[in-house]
Length: 136
Image 1 (spheres, rainbow, N blue to C red):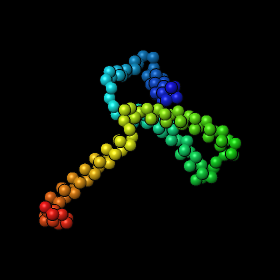
Image 2: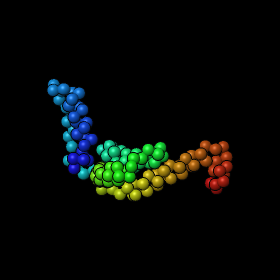
Image 3: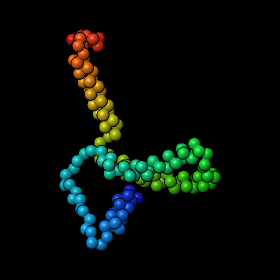
């Protein structure tokens, strides 16, 4: 659990050092109700850290600066263990929802907005919907 909360601990330590002994930190009261949503802001540090290993691997391949196979396998193994633990917290951020359902609802909303823009454009055209090839 401490792996997923490491970004929180880092921020807390920085605030404590910068604030000094005389500055009281601001406390955030947690809500007492269940809210089903995607907590992407809270899991963004874990997602970025988890994505850094594959990004570094791709950059290493592109630039030709990969280390020897023994180092690559050793560091890659432990990197995958750490990335898996971090990305497990990202999955927990999808509390009560399915990412595929969320993407489908975003797609439906985008289609509705595009349809609305098309109808608005037809209404704004001097010849109306007939100019766009639609019967009114």
